Image 1 (tube, rainbow, N blue to C red):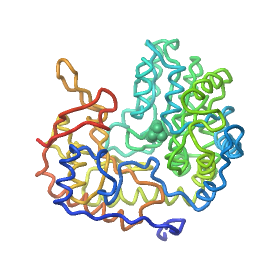
Image 2 (tube, helix red, strand yellow):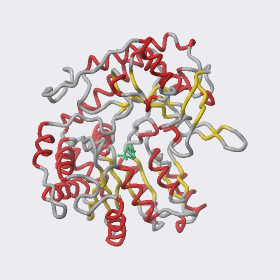
Image 3 (cartoon, rainbow, N blue to C red):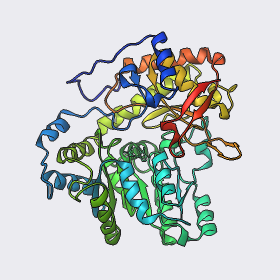
Image 4 (tube, rainbow, N blue to C red):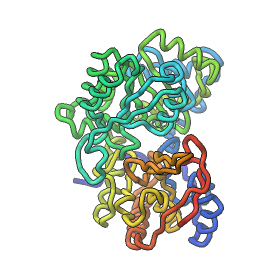
Length: 457
Ligand SMILES: *Cc1c(COP(=O)(O)O)cnc(C)c1O
Protein backbone atom coordinates (compact mmCIF):
# COMPACT_ATOMS: atom_id res chain seq x y z
CA UNK A 1 0.00 0.00 0.00
CA UNK A 2 1.27 3.48 -0.86
CA UNK A 3 1.66 6.26 1.73
CA UNK A 4 -1.64 8.01 2.37
CA UNK A 5 -0.83 11.64 1.63
CA UNK A 6 -2.44 14.94 2.60
CA UNK A 7 -5.24 15.49 0.06
CA UNK A 8 -4.32 19.19 -0.23
CA UNK A 9 -1.33 21.44 -0.86
CA UNK A 10 -0.35 24.40 1.31
CA UNK A 11 -1.32 27.89 0.13
CA UNK A 12 -0.61 30.07 3.16
CA UNK A 13 1.90 29.46 5.95
CA UNK A 14 2.17 30.66 9.53
CA UNK A 15 5.62 30.66 11.18
CA UNK A 16 6.04 28.95 14.54
CA UNK A 17 8.45 30.23 17.20
CA UNK A 18 11.22 28.22 18.79
CA UNK A 19 12.05 28.67 22.48
CA UNK A 20 14.62 26.90 24.66
CA UNK A 21 14.17 24.86 27.80
CA UNK A 22 15.36 27.62 30.15
CA UNK A 23 12.85 30.07 28.65
CA UNK A 24 10.08 27.48 28.92
CA UNK A 25 10.96 26.79 32.55
CA UNK A 26 10.41 30.48 33.39
CA UNK A 27 7.24 30.63 31.31
CA UNK A 28 5.74 27.57 33.01
CA UNK A 29 6.32 29.04 36.45
CA UNK A 30 4.78 32.35 35.37
CA UNK A 31 1.58 30.67 34.11
CA UNK A 32 1.13 28.60 37.26
CA UNK A 33 1.86 25.35 35.40
CA UNK A 34 -1.47 25.68 33.59
CA UNK A 35 -0.95 25.33 29.83
CA UNK A 36 -4.23 27.14 29.12
CA UNK A 37 -2.45 30.27 30.37
CA UNK A 38 0.38 30.09 27.86
CA UNK A 39 0.76 32.64 25.10
CA UNK A 40 0.48 30.64 21.90
CA UNK A 41 3.65 32.38 20.62
CA UNK A 42 5.48 30.43 23.32
CA UNK A 43 4.18 27.11 21.95
CA UNK A 44 5.96 25.26 19.16
CA UNK A 45 3.45 22.50 18.36
CA UNK A 46 0.00 23.20 19.74
CA UNK A 47 -1.94 20.02 20.47
CA UNK A 48 -4.07 21.58 23.19
CA UNK A 49 -7.20 21.03 21.17
CA UNK A 50 -8.58 20.25 17.74
CA UNK A 51 -11.31 22.80 18.44
CA UNK A 52 -11.38 25.87 16.23
CA UNK A 53 -7.81 25.19 15.15
CA UNK A 54 -8.52 23.77 11.67
CA UNK A 55 -6.92 25.25 8.59
CA UNK A 56 -9.70 26.54 6.37
CA UNK A 57 -9.68 25.82 2.66
CA UNK A 58 -9.42 28.37 -0.12
CA UNK A 59 -13.14 27.84 -0.75
CA UNK A 60 -13.95 28.54 2.90
CA UNK A 61 -11.94 31.77 2.76
CA UNK A 62 -13.74 32.66 -0.44
CA UNK A 63 -16.95 32.14 1.50
CA UNK A 64 -15.73 34.62 4.09
CA UNK A 65 -15.65 37.28 1.36
CA UNK A 66 -18.97 36.07 -0.09
CA UNK A 67 -20.78 36.18 3.25
CA UNK A 68 -24.06 38.12 3.29
CA UNK A 69 -24.17 40.23 6.43
CA UNK A 70 -27.90 41.05 6.30
CA UNK A 71 -29.32 41.14 9.82
CA UNK A 72 -32.35 39.11 8.79
CA UNK A 73 -32.80 36.59 6.00
CA UNK A 74 -29.12 36.44 5.05
CA UNK A 75 -28.33 34.40 1.93
CA UNK A 76 -25.50 32.81 3.90
CA UNK A 77 -27.96 31.60 6.51
CA UNK A 78 -30.08 29.91 3.88
CA UNK A 79 -27.02 28.16 2.45
CA UNK A 80 -25.97 27.08 5.95
CA UNK A 81 -29.47 25.86 6.75
CA UNK A 82 -29.68 23.90 3.50
CA UNK A 83 -26.31 22.19 4.05
CA UNK A 84 -27.01 21.33 7.70
CA UNK A 85 -30.46 20.02 6.81
CA UNK A 86 -29.04 17.90 3.98
CA UNK A 87 -26.36 16.53 6.29
CA UNK A 88 -28.49 15.85 9.35
CA UNK A 89 -32.08 15.68 8.15
CA UNK A 90 -33.32 17.73 11.11
CA UNK A 91 -36.19 20.19 10.63
CA UNK A 92 -35.07 23.21 12.66
CA UNK A 93 -31.53 24.52 12.34
CA UNK A 94 -30.48 27.09 14.91
CA UNK A 95 -27.03 28.70 14.53
CA UNK A 96 -25.03 29.41 17.69
CA UNK A 97 -21.56 30.88 18.18
CA UNK A 98 -20.22 27.51 19.30
CA UNK A 99 -21.24 24.14 20.70
CA UNK A 100 -21.65 25.15 24.33
CA UNK A 101 -24.12 27.89 23.37
CA UNK A 102 -26.30 25.20 21.79
CA UNK A 103 -25.92 23.14 24.98
CA UNK A 104 -26.78 26.11 27.16
CA UNK A 105 -30.00 26.74 25.21
CA UNK A 106 -30.97 23.04 25.14
CA UNK A 107 -30.41 22.42 28.85
CA UNK A 108 -32.00 25.66 30.02
CA UNK A 109 -35.16 24.36 28.36
CA UNK A 110 -34.89 20.64 29.11
CA UNK A 111 -32.71 20.49 32.23
CA UNK A 112 -33.56 21.66 35.76
CA UNK A 113 -33.61 20.53 39.40
CA UNK A 114 -34.39 16.87 39.94
CA UNK A 115 -33.64 15.85 36.34
CA UNK A 116 -30.95 13.39 35.29
CA UNK A 117 -29.24 13.24 31.89
CA UNK A 118 -27.40 10.13 30.68
CA UNK A 119 -24.65 10.28 28.05
CA UNK A 120 -21.99 7.77 26.94
CA UNK A 121 -19.60 10.38 28.39
CA UNK A 122 -20.41 14.04 28.88
CA UNK A 123 -17.87 16.43 27.46
CA UNK A 124 -16.78 18.99 30.08
CA UNK A 125 -18.92 21.88 28.78
CA UNK A 126 -21.91 19.57 28.32
CA UNK A 127 -21.61 18.39 31.92
CA UNK A 128 -21.22 21.98 33.10
CA UNK A 129 -24.35 23.08 31.21
CA UNK A 130 -26.39 20.14 32.54
CA UNK A 131 -25.23 20.89 36.08
CA UNK A 132 -25.77 24.65 35.76
CA UNK A 133 -29.42 23.94 34.95
CA UNK A 134 -29.67 22.06 38.27
CA UNK A 135 -29.80 18.60 36.67
CA UNK A 136 -27.38 15.75 37.19
CA UNK A 137 -25.11 14.49 34.39
CA UNK A 138 -24.44 10.74 34.41
CA UNK A 139 -21.91 8.90 32.21
CA UNK A 140 -22.77 5.36 31.07
CA UNK A 141 -19.85 4.21 28.90
CA UNK A 142 -19.37 0.52 28.08
CA UNK A 143 -16.95 -1.21 30.47
CA UNK A 144 -14.26 -1.71 27.82
CA UNK A 145 -14.42 2.03 27.06
CA UNK A 146 -12.64 2.87 30.29
CA UNK A 147 -9.81 0.34 30.00
CA UNK A 148 -7.10 2.22 28.04
CA UNK A 149 -5.07 -0.85 27.07
CA UNK A 150 -8.00 -2.85 25.71
CA UNK A 151 -8.43 -2.82 21.93
CA UNK A 152 -11.96 -2.82 20.52
CA UNK A 153 -13.69 -1.27 17.53
CA UNK A 154 -16.32 0.82 19.29
CA UNK A 155 -15.11 1.73 22.74
CA UNK A 156 -17.21 4.91 22.61
CA UNK A 157 -20.46 2.95 22.92
CA UNK A 158 -23.18 3.55 25.49
CA UNK A 159 -23.66 0.73 28.00
CA UNK A 160 -27.17 -0.35 26.96
CA UNK A 161 -27.85 -2.55 29.99
CA UNK A 162 -26.75 0.24 32.32
CA UNK A 163 -29.03 2.63 30.43
CA UNK A 164 -32.05 0.32 30.90
CA UNK A 165 -31.35 0.00 34.64
CA UNK A 166 -30.79 3.75 34.86
CA UNK A 167 -34.19 4.47 33.28
CA UNK A 168 -35.89 1.95 35.57
CA UNK A 169 -34.28 3.39 38.68
CA UNK A 170 -34.85 7.05 37.88
CA UNK A 171 -38.13 6.82 35.96
CA UNK A 172 -38.44 8.34 32.50
CA UNK A 173 -40.21 11.43 33.89
CA UNK A 174 -36.88 12.49 35.44
CA UNK A 175 -34.94 11.99 32.21
CA UNK A 176 -35.62 14.93 29.86
CA UNK A 177 -33.27 13.56 27.18
CA UNK A 178 -30.47 11.10 26.63
CA UNK A 179 -27.34 11.91 24.64
CA UNK A 180 -24.60 10.10 22.80
CA UNK A 181 -21.35 11.92 22.08
CA UNK A 182 -19.74 11.01 18.74
CA UNK A 183 -16.89 10.37 18.84
CA UNK A 184 -16.48 10.02 22.59
CA UNK A 185 -14.09 12.90 23.19
CA UNK A 186 -13.58 12.47 26.93
CA UNK A 187 -12.99 8.73 26.61
CA UNK A 188 -10.22 8.44 24.05
CA UNK A 189 -11.99 9.91 21.01
CA UNK A 190 -13.43 6.46 20.41
CA UNK A 191 -16.26 5.89 17.94
CA UNK A 192 -19.81 4.73 18.62
CA UNK A 193 -21.27 2.04 16.37
CA UNK A 194 -24.43 2.51 14.31
CA UNK A 195 -25.90 -0.49 16.13
CA UNK A 196 -25.29 1.19 19.49
CA UNK A 197 -26.84 4.47 18.30
CA UNK A 198 -29.85 2.58 16.93
CA UNK A 199 -30.40 0.56 20.09
CA UNK A 200 -29.91 3.55 22.40
CA UNK A 201 -32.52 5.45 20.40
CA UNK A 202 -34.84 2.46 20.58
CA UNK A 203 -34.55 2.19 24.37
CA UNK A 204 -35.08 5.94 24.75
CA UNK A 205 -38.08 6.07 22.46
CA UNK A 206 -39.73 3.03 24.09
CA UNK A 207 -39.60 5.04 27.30
CA UNK A 208 -40.72 8.32 25.73
CA UNK A 209 -37.28 9.93 26.19
CA UNK A 210 -35.92 12.19 23.42
CA UNK A 211 -32.55 11.10 22.06
CA UNK A 212 -29.88 13.61 21.01
CA UNK A 213 -26.44 13.39 19.47
CA UNK A 214 -23.53 15.55 20.57
CA UNK A 215 -22.37 15.57 16.97
CA UNK A 216 -19.06 17.48 17.16
CA UNK A 217 -17.10 14.71 15.38
CA UNK A 218 -19.90 13.07 13.43
CA UNK A 219 -17.84 12.72 10.22
CA UNK A 220 -14.92 11.00 11.93
CA UNK A 221 -17.41 8.70 13.67
CA UNK A 222 -19.15 7.93 10.38
CA UNK A 223 -15.81 7.05 8.79
CA UNK A 224 -15.01 4.61 11.61
CA UNK A 225 -18.41 2.99 11.06
CA UNK A 226 -17.58 2.66 7.36
CA UNK A 227 -14.26 0.91 7.95
CA UNK A 228 -15.13 -1.10 11.07
CA UNK A 229 -18.83 -1.97 11.22
CA UNK A 230 -20.24 -4.81 9.18
CA UNK A 231 -22.51 -3.74 6.34
CA UNK A 232 -21.25 -0.17 5.91
CA UNK A 233 -18.15 -0.66 3.73
CA UNK A 234 -19.97 0.24 0.54
CA UNK A 235 -22.03 3.11 1.87
CA UNK A 236 -20.78 6.69 1.46
CA UNK A 237 -19.77 8.49 4.66
CA UNK A 238 -22.46 11.04 3.89
CA UNK A 239 -25.12 8.31 3.85
CA UNK A 240 -23.73 6.83 7.06
CA UNK A 241 -23.78 10.21 8.77
CA UNK A 242 -27.34 10.79 7.61
CA UNK A 243 -28.35 7.41 9.02
CA UNK A 244 -26.69 8.20 12.38
CA UNK A 245 -28.70 11.43 12.61
CA UNK A 246 -31.90 9.70 11.51
CA UNK A 247 -32.15 7.91 14.87
CA UNK A 248 -31.94 11.15 16.84
CA UNK A 249 -34.48 13.83 17.69
CA UNK A 250 -31.87 16.53 17.50
CA UNK A 251 -28.22 17.38 18.00
CA UNK A 252 -25.84 19.91 19.40
CA UNK A 253 -22.82 20.67 17.25
CA UNK A 254 -19.57 22.52 17.59
CA UNK A 255 -18.54 23.61 14.10
CA UNK A 256 -15.05 24.07 15.53
CA UNK A 257 -14.48 20.35 15.11
CA UNK A 258 -16.00 18.59 12.12
CA UNK A 259 -17.20 21.71 10.32
CA UNK A 260 -13.56 22.78 9.87
CA UNK A 261 -14.13 26.35 11.05
CA UNK A 262 -12.57 28.55 13.70
CA UNK A 263 -15.91 29.53 15.23
CA UNK A 264 -19.51 28.37 14.95
CA UNK A 265 -21.99 25.74 15.97
CA UNK A 266 -25.66 24.89 15.93
CA UNK A 267 -28.58 23.25 17.63
CA UNK A 268 -30.82 21.16 15.39
CA UNK A 269 -34.15 19.67 16.46
CA UNK A 270 -37.26 18.16 14.95
CA UNK A 271 -39.76 19.22 17.60
CA UNK A 272 -41.56 22.46 16.63
CA UNK A 273 -42.36 23.52 20.19
CA UNK A 274 -38.78 22.93 21.38
CA UNK A 275 -37.42 24.86 18.37
CA UNK A 276 -39.68 27.80 19.21
CA UNK A 277 -38.49 27.87 22.81
CA UNK A 278 -34.88 27.58 21.67
CA UNK A 279 -35.26 30.50 19.23
CA UNK A 280 -36.78 32.60 22.02
CA UNK A 281 -33.65 32.10 24.11
CA UNK A 282 -31.43 32.48 21.04
CA UNK A 283 -32.71 35.99 20.32
CA UNK A 284 -31.89 37.10 23.85
CA UNK A 285 -28.51 35.37 24.27
CA UNK A 286 -27.04 34.86 20.79
CA UNK A 287 -28.84 36.80 18.08
CA UNK A 288 -31.63 36.81 15.53
CA UNK A 289 -32.52 33.28 14.28
CA UNK A 290 -30.91 33.76 10.86
CA UNK A 291 -27.48 34.46 12.28
CA UNK A 292 -27.48 33.23 15.88
CA UNK A 293 -24.15 34.14 17.39
CA UNK A 294 -22.35 34.35 14.07
CA UNK A 295 -21.54 36.68 11.18
CA UNK A 296 -22.92 35.85 7.76
CA UNK A 297 -19.42 34.98 6.59
CA UNK A 298 -19.00 32.45 9.42
CA UNK A 299 -22.14 30.69 8.22
CA UNK A 300 -20.64 30.46 4.71
CA UNK A 301 -17.40 28.94 6.03
CA UNK A 302 -19.38 26.50 8.16
CA UNK A 303 -21.55 25.37 5.26
CA UNK A 304 -18.48 24.85 3.06
CA UNK A 305 -16.62 23.03 5.86
CA UNK A 306 -19.50 20.61 6.36
CA UNK A 307 -19.27 19.70 2.67
CA UNK A 308 -15.50 19.20 2.78
CA UNK A 309 -15.41 17.15 5.97
CA UNK A 310 -17.45 14.38 4.35
CA UNK A 311 -15.01 13.95 1.45
CA UNK A 312 -13.65 10.43 1.82
CA UNK A 313 -10.07 11.30 0.77
CA UNK A 314 -10.02 13.83 3.57
CA UNK A 315 -11.36 11.39 6.19
CA UNK A 316 -9.01 8.63 5.08
CA UNK A 317 -6.04 10.98 5.50
CA UNK A 318 -7.39 12.37 8.76
CA UNK A 319 -7.89 9.04 10.50
CA UNK A 320 -4.66 7.62 9.07
CA UNK A 321 -2.54 10.57 10.21
CA UNK A 322 -3.80 10.23 13.81
CA UNK A 323 -3.30 6.45 13.76
CA UNK A 324 0.26 7.02 12.47
CA UNK A 325 1.20 8.92 15.63
CA UNK A 326 -0.40 6.23 17.78
CA UNK A 327 1.45 3.40 16.04
CA UNK A 328 4.82 5.17 16.38
CA UNK A 329 4.25 5.70 20.11
CA UNK A 330 3.21 2.08 20.63
CA UNK A 331 6.45 0.99 18.92
CA UNK A 332 8.35 3.02 21.52
CA UNK A 333 6.46 1.27 24.32
CA UNK A 334 4.54 4.41 25.31
CA UNK A 335 1.20 3.51 26.95
CA UNK A 336 -1.63 5.09 24.97
CA UNK A 337 -5.37 4.72 24.99
CA UNK A 338 -5.97 1.91 22.50
CA UNK A 339 -6.82 1.90 19.69
CA UNK A 340 -5.92 5.44 18.45
CA UNK A 341 -9.02 7.68 18.36
CA UNK A 342 -10.31 9.93 15.61
CA UNK A 343 -8.94 13.33 16.54
CA UNK A 344 -6.31 12.71 19.16
CA UNK A 345 -3.87 10.36 20.79
CA UNK A 346 -4.40 9.99 24.51
CA UNK A 347 -1.39 9.04 26.60
CA UNK A 348 -2.30 6.88 29.57
CA UNK A 349 -0.65 8.98 32.28
CA UNK A 350 -1.48 6.46 35.03
CA UNK A 351 0.57 3.82 33.24
CA UNK A 352 3.19 6.28 32.00
CA UNK A 353 3.84 7.59 35.53
CA UNK A 354 2.83 4.78 37.91
CA UNK A 355 4.79 6.42 40.74
CA UNK A 356 2.52 9.50 40.69
CA UNK A 357 -0.91 8.86 42.29
CA UNK A 358 -4.07 10.43 40.78
CA UNK A 359 -4.20 12.93 43.67
CA UNK A 360 -0.88 14.32 42.42
CA UNK A 361 -2.24 14.72 38.86
CA UNK A 362 0.03 12.55 36.68
CA UNK A 363 -1.59 13.91 33.49
CA UNK A 364 -0.78 17.48 34.45
CA UNK A 365 2.78 16.52 35.39
CA UNK A 366 3.21 14.91 31.99
CA UNK A 367 1.66 17.90 30.18
CA UNK A 368 4.13 20.26 31.85
CA UNK A 369 7.12 18.02 31.09
CA UNK A 370 6.16 17.68 27.44
CA UNK A 371 6.01 21.46 27.15
CA UNK A 372 9.29 21.85 28.96
CA UNK A 373 10.97 19.21 26.84
CA UNK A 374 9.72 20.08 23.36
CA UNK A 375 7.48 23.17 23.47
CA UNK A 376 4.49 20.91 22.87
CA UNK A 377 1.17 21.92 24.38
CA UNK A 378 -1.27 19.12 25.28
CA UNK A 379 -4.35 18.84 27.48
CA UNK A 380 -4.90 16.88 30.68
CA UNK A 381 -8.12 14.85 30.65
CA UNK A 382 -8.01 13.29 34.06
CA UNK A 383 -8.42 14.33 37.66
CA UNK A 384 -7.70 18.01 37.02
CA UNK A 385 -10.60 18.12 34.56
CA UNK A 386 -12.96 15.57 36.11
CA UNK A 387 -11.71 14.88 39.64
CA UNK A 388 -13.33 16.56 42.60
CA UNK A 389 -11.92 17.77 45.90
CA UNK A 390 -14.63 18.14 48.54
CA UNK A 391 -14.45 21.72 49.80
CA UNK A 392 -15.16 20.92 53.48
CA UNK A 393 -13.68 17.47 54.06
CA UNK A 394 -10.84 17.80 51.56
CA UNK A 395 -11.48 14.25 50.31
CA UNK A 396 -10.35 13.65 46.77
CA UNK A 397 -12.41 11.78 44.16
CA UNK A 398 -10.25 10.91 41.14
CA UNK A 399 -11.46 10.78 37.53
CA UNK A 400 -12.09 7.38 35.92
CA UNK A 401 -8.87 7.69 33.91
CA UNK A 402 -5.75 9.85 33.88
CA UNK A 403 -5.22 10.78 30.25
CA UNK A 404 -3.13 13.33 28.41
CA UNK A 405 -4.66 14.31 25.12
CA UNK A 406 -2.55 15.18 22.10
CA UNK A 407 -5.30 16.64 19.95
CA UNK A 408 -4.42 16.96 16.31
CA UNK A 409 -5.73 20.07 14.54
CA UNK A 410 -7.30 19.37 11.17
CA UNK A 411 -5.16 20.03 8.07
CA UNK A 412 -2.58 22.00 10.11
CA UNK A 413 0.54 19.94 10.85
CA UNK A 414 2.63 17.81 8.51
CA UNK A 415 4.14 14.39 9.07
CA UNK A 416 7.49 15.86 10.20
CA UNK A 417 5.74 17.90 12.90
CA UNK A 418 4.20 14.66 14.10
CA UNK A 419 7.53 12.81 13.94
CA UNK A 420 8.98 15.52 16.19
CA UNK A 421 6.11 15.04 18.66
CA UNK A 422 6.70 11.29 18.71
CA UNK A 423 10.44 11.83 19.38
CA UNK A 424 9.71 14.19 22.28
CA UNK A 425 7.16 11.88 23.90
CA UNK A 426 9.64 8.99 23.50
CA UNK A 427 12.41 10.99 25.21
CA UNK A 428 10.15 12.00 28.11
CA UNK A 429 9.09 8.36 28.42
CA UNK A 430 12.73 7.33 28.83
CA UNK A 431 13.21 9.67 31.79
CA UNK A 432 9.72 9.19 33.24
CA UNK A 433 10.99 8.04 36.65
CA UNK A 434 12.43 11.52 37.28
CA UNK A 435 9.03 13.27 36.96
CA UNK A 436 7.16 14.58 40.01
CA UNK A 437 3.47 15.14 40.75
CA UNK A 438 1.62 18.46 41.07
CA UNK A 439 -0.53 20.19 43.64
CA UNK A 440 -3.40 22.63 42.98
CA UNK A 441 -2.90 25.93 44.80
CA UNK A 442 -6.01 27.72 43.51
CA UNK A 443 -9.08 26.67 41.53
CA UNK A 444 -12.55 27.83 40.47
CA UNK A 445 -15.78 25.93 41.24
CA UNK A 446 -16.66 25.06 37.60
CA UNK A 447 -14.36 23.96 34.75
CA UNK A 448 -11.39 24.36 37.07
CA UNK A 449 -8.90 23.03 34.52
CA UNK A 450 -9.11 26.31 32.58
CA UNK A 451 -7.89 28.48 35.44
CA UNK A 452 -6.36 26.34 38.22
CA UNK A 453 -2.86 27.22 39.37
CA UNK A 454 -0.39 24.46 40.21
CA UNK A 455 2.87 23.87 41.98
CA UNK A 456 5.26 20.97 41.40
CA UNK A 457 5.63 18.63 44.39
C1 LIG B 1 -15.95 20.92 21.84
C2 LIG B 1 -17.04 20.09 22.31
C3 LIG B 1 -18.21 20.66 22.82
C4 LIG B 1 -18.38 22.15 23.01
O1 LIG B 1 -18.23 22.88 21.86
P1 LIG B 1 -17.57 24.35 21.85
O2 LIG B 1 -17.65 24.77 20.43
O3 LIG B 1 -16.17 24.22 22.34
O4 LIG B 1 -18.37 25.20 22.74
C5 LIG B 1 -19.21 19.80 23.19
N1 LIG B 1 -19.09 18.47 23.10
C6 LIG B 1 -17.97 17.89 22.62
C7 LIG B 1 -17.90 16.39 22.51
C8 LIG B 1 -16.91 18.68 22.23
O5 LIG B 1 -15.80 18.09 21.77
